[in-house]
Length: 99
Picture 1: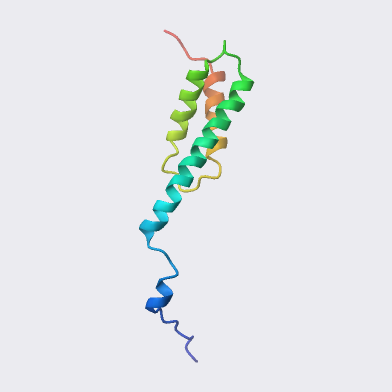
Picture 2 (picture 1 turned 90 degrees about the vertical axis):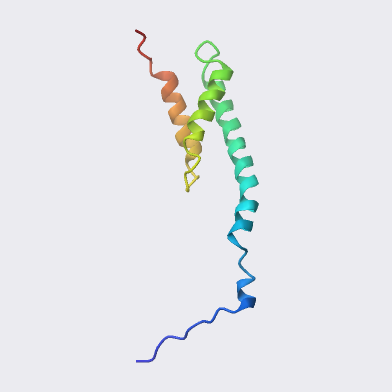
């Protein structure tokens, strides 16, 4: 049975893939900008949904940022905005027990 061909990696082919540190530096500012855009969108949507009597803008922003920071280490970021929005809505709509 013939063996499959082996592909040799040369110094030249390794230049096509940037080092991990460069990838992280390039991706980081775009990720932060995207996160901030999502936070602003969530606050805007929820601000239209709830009156100022239900929750102040400052409290709404604080809750969104708090829940969003809980997903800071999430590797898959596609649904973070949806999760955060649902968590904030639930925190507003669920009455808290006061002693």
